[in-house]
Image (cartoon, rainbow, N blue to C red; front, side):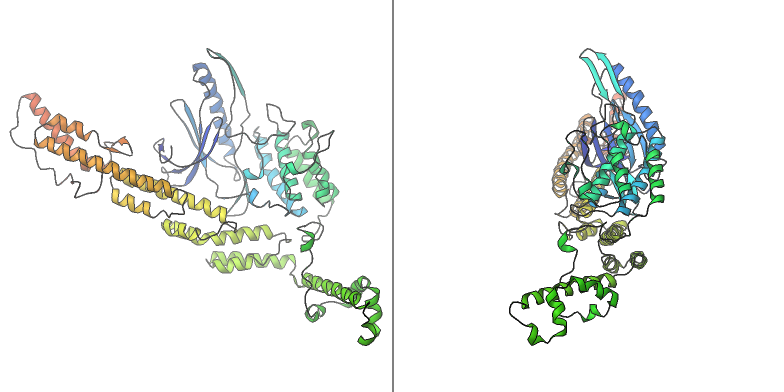
Length: 590
């Protein structure tokens, strides 16, 4: 279906996924002035039994109504349209530009407690609205949570089921069982039955929280052999209150969990009122690896850092020094430089120097409010399109800071913005080439590949439309703008070869048709021109190509046929069609 026009409005650009009930596509809405991207879900019935299809359509229409209600929320995809073609059903909703939360949950990098609390609150507010409409999401996971590029807020996508219902009907082939679903089913918790429950969403959201706190995938964590509970607590260091809250979310038995987002949200709000979250950046809320907790200690001088330490801080370090180093403080170098004592003295000095360096770095780092100023300044640089300065400022925030993820998202946006600026003014080929310079594994690479694919698809769709109008040369020039590194480069090359071959065949039919007119073979001329095709399909009579190239031949032949049928034979040769019908040599168009 790639490049196909659905409902005379939606240009299919790319297949995103295939499930048990159909496919999901990225498309472009040509019916709106801005031609925005959108998502199309194509649902195919499992049976063509009339009674089955009638029941299926009733449930489909009910689901459309519910999707329409959900679409009024800013954090959910808006339902754009729904329609039916023959026995297939289509849902269209808007495309949310951003990156999935999965990109932020890096292995061995754990979130701080306040980050997880903020995340849970934000998601529970969204779920509270969803559950309030009587809807279960059914597949909450990091891959289905998007952080929007425009404001860094979270959005929930890919609803698996809108009140899943089972159809059981009797047909000639036997019993048919079908569960209606809007998209491909995903992860289900152990306590979930056929009918998903609100607590299933709570469970899966709790799994995302555990993953963010431990830096580990859920299947990497052990479970209790009897109860089946996930034993994740040893991998995290958070307050007992939040630990208990998350454990309630992920209880194996559904009845033991919070039964709705509203209940969980009320508990979490009360919980955070009664205990203080650990301060951002404290050692017990952020863990990378033990070797990265202390800066390198191979400095030859401590003057810069020592000048920043107060007397009380030095007294706190003194007990950590070795006895030999303490004893040496009142002696000369010659008295303390004994062979057996030297390694101990040097070791103690190295330890002290390391602690001085660490404490110096801690005191040099700005407080939280200053990091917010840095981030605000980086955002201001972005607003002025000073992208290198934006990236430089955003990258100064250390990983343990509360604003780190937001800073990294901003830096990535500033990395992608120059290309997006080019794309907005129609310079898609330059934009694609710019993104192609981002190496694999670097920040923004996945997002760059996605944008390159979208823009390449847009160029391919634009070229197909140009060719459909009969502008072969312009279409080929558009295809040449798609770089070799693009995901659709091979498809573009194949399209160019196919269109050129089809154009040559069309020109042959046009030449033969004009020759038939000159020989007064009116019907033959019509039959020959009827073989002209664009993209493998007959040319629409309302298209510019038909009116400019084919219609003059058909009108002339039909006029002469009417004369023959009426007995008014014309002995005059056919009129010269060259002014309105370009020859193959004059026009490369099909």
